[in-house]
Amino acid sequence: MKSLIVYDTKHGASAEVAERIAKVIQGKGGEAELLDLRVKGAAAAPLGAYDAVVLGGPYYMGMWSKRAKAFAARREADLAGKAIGLFAVGSNAELGDKAAIAALPASLRAAVAASAYVGGRLVFRELGSFERFIVKKVSGSEADSSTLDLSKAEALGAELAAIAAAKKALK
Ligand SMILES: Cc1cc2nc3c(=O)[nH]c(=O)nc-3n(C[C@H](O)[C@H](O)[C@H](O)COP(=O)(O)O)c2cc1C
Picture 1 (tube, rainbow, N blue to C red):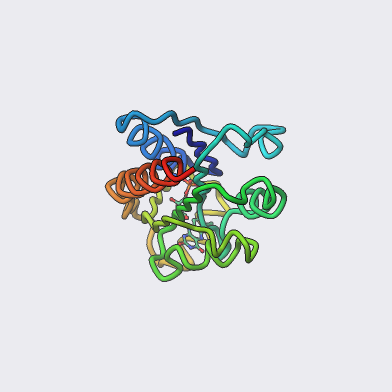
Picture 2 (cartoon, rainbow, N blue to C red; picture 1 turned 90 degrees about the horizontal axis):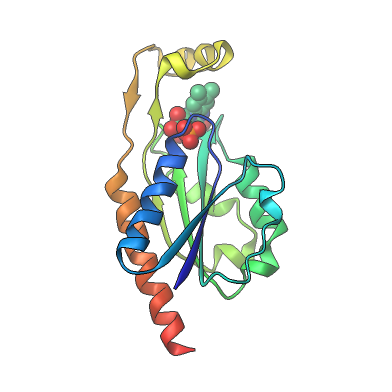
């Protein structure tokens, strides 16, 4: 079972989630590789070798990662038939994973086999001045906060590993 964890991140929380998912899959005897969508050309990477693809990234200003959304749209045909996982990172639990799933093309939305909202993290010294201004305006606070729950990433990795293994066994 070979998996690719495709992620976008601005301040690193989504990268940590992706790494944790990969570790869990590897711990179950699967192969897992990471693809950072910030790297030039990453969105065009070949996907043929993978049984499972997890796509994840953060919410900013009410929108799920533009890079993750664009990757799903561009690679829709290449992703067909694979076990698809999704994770969403954000400090506002209201969006959950639903808004991220809604950002996928319809065919992939229906194909998501496992998904998770894993919370988010705000570390003020890592933010730019505009970001600080926005967060302060929205939350009324300048205190660091984290609801990031990596156990949810672990559960997603385990679930997807089981689904992809079952899918492979049926082939
Ligand atoms: C300017 C700004 C806007 C944000 N907007 C949202 C939002 O609309 N919804 C949400 O759930 N989280 C929002 N967040 C929180 C981020 O999603 C959170 O910090 C997340 O952990 C960032 O992930 P990353 O480290 O992978 O970039 C915002 C954060 C900043 C700095």
